[in-house]
Length: 318
Image (cartoon, rainbow, N blue to C red; front, side, top):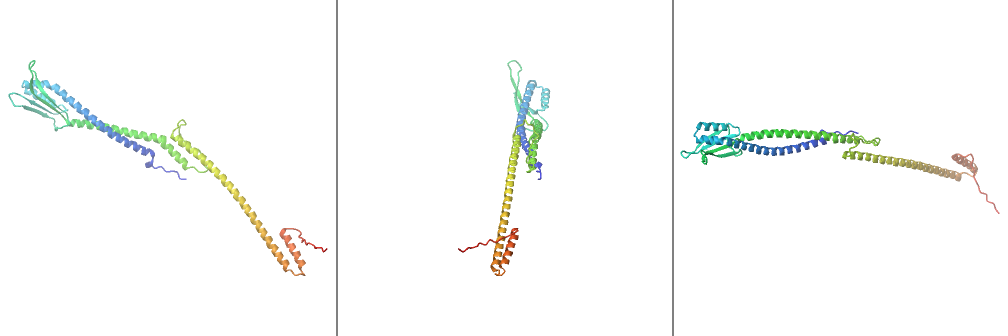
């Protein structure tokens, strides 16, 4: 009997690994999406906090430079703030009662307006003397959206690679564990069943597993062995039936042969009787006694007897 050929494409381990890998990919997609959202929120909050720190750091110096009309200090502070990576554009509006508002602005190279990056607006107030408060301008800080996307891409790439690596490790672990604990024993059972014949039906199935394990494979092993025992008993019963039937058939054949021989012998006897009767009937009177002797001799030869006699009843007249 040909042994079953296992195709890798139909292996349970491969199918389970593919299912686990697809699930891991779906989980990776969801996890990366959630992580991207969290990363964006964290990056946005971090950028907004950084812009607030810039506000706090430059609020007093800018207000003082505007009040004192120190253009050089004002330009230096604005240029310095514009060099910070999180700042996409810094714009300052100088207000004066004697002049029209003046706007000073610096932009990072390649920056473009965005509604996604955080924007902070701060009213610049200078206190020239205790109790006095002068509104000297407004400071607007706009974050650089490119920095948010750059951080998001780097974090997403790292998370995706990590999740894919974990998925591959999980799929490999599932394949290794399933192949060792299930596939190997299932193939052993299949090979054992394919090699069963009426002569080898008494060979028990023994899986190379710990006897302490009592799971589905143990139940399958026990069931196969019980099925073999039942099949062995059934085959033995069939053999007994076949032996009895053969003996009955042989006895019947003997009876038929005996009956046939009896019928043949009876036929021969009938033919002999008819033949002798015909000879005696047509025998001439002068040679009747000789014919009788010949008939008696033939009957003796046919019956294997040494002598044959005629019994003739004698009628007495009273």
